Every structure is written in C-alpha cells, then in structure tokens.
Length: 114
Image (cartoon, rainbow, N blue to C red; front, side):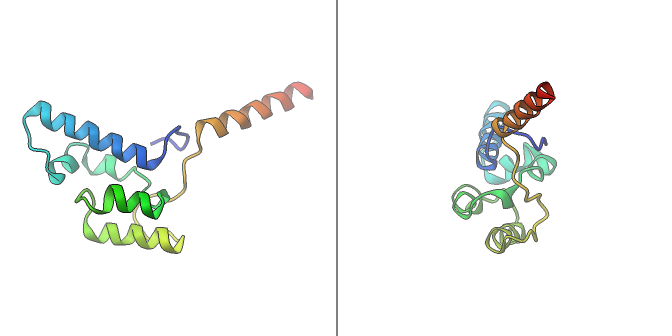
C-alpha cells in the first residue's frame, strides 16, 4: 500500500470492512468476522498500519472484532502504548496527500526561484 494516502488507517480498515460486508452479501455468504476477514485476505489486512492508529481508534474499530488474532491485538496495543513497534504491521503513519502537496509546492517554488 502507498505511503502517501489521504486517509487514516481507521478509515482504511472501516472501508475494507464495508467492502468485505458488501462482497459477502453479494455472494450470499454470512457476515461473520471470519468471513469478513477472509474476503480481503491476510495480504490486504497486513497492509493496514494498525500501530499507527490511536489506542481509542484501535479499541473501538478493531479490538472487539476477530479481524486479527488475539496475539496480534495484544501486540498492536503494546506497540501503541510503548511507541515501539512489536507488531508485524508497519507503524509509521502515512504522509497525507495535503502535506505531500505542500512539500512539492515548496520544492517547485524553490526550483523556480533559483
């Protein structure tokens, strides 16, 4: 997944969940956490930067589901609490598109000015 993205990890995981629920409904599958986890697959779930979420975001949107196994949930909470990544997921926040555009704009102006 891209390091430059104009949305939060919380919005990404909620979007994945909405997409997975829609895919389950469309194919006649149940909408259990297990089915919802299986639709995007481990490869997609592993790209979400759970440790970059706030503790509240993670607790409210992920920890109460079975999208992650229990040990991953504990590791993410440990990563968020200690600010040291012990989870298998990337922890660096993505650069928002607005920040990237600001830096590119400044760089362009600098190059024009000499």
